[in-house]
Image 1 (cartoon, helix red, strand yellow):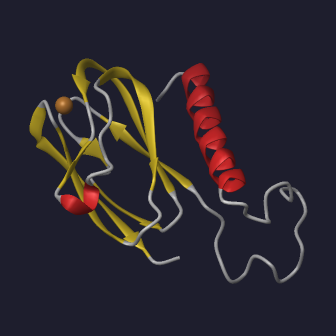
Image 2 (tube, protein in one colour):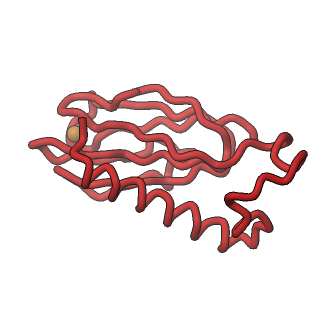
Length: 133
Ligand SMILES: [Cu+2]
């Protein structure tokens, strides 16, 4: 289990990123959190942040399915440095710094299958499947 302080930090980081994304694209639903207008949120699920834990020899979960617009936050907390690096053209934007302890997140806007590995430990692999929103 992550220590509460670090978990709070990760949550805050993810929220800031989503908030920045919302304001950046001029979405009209920013600032309406807390209100629940009937019929406005049934067509589309709100964006979510899903956490992948980076363990010493694996990503957990290694295979993950999300919806376009969702953010994946990788949480690093170990004794060895690890990173997230996309495999192939589709996942070219996936390229994190190396962390022993830290958090890195990426928002997936286009549907598809994104494969990645840890550049230092190529046996550590994962796949993010992004479904159409
Ligand atoms: Cu690694």
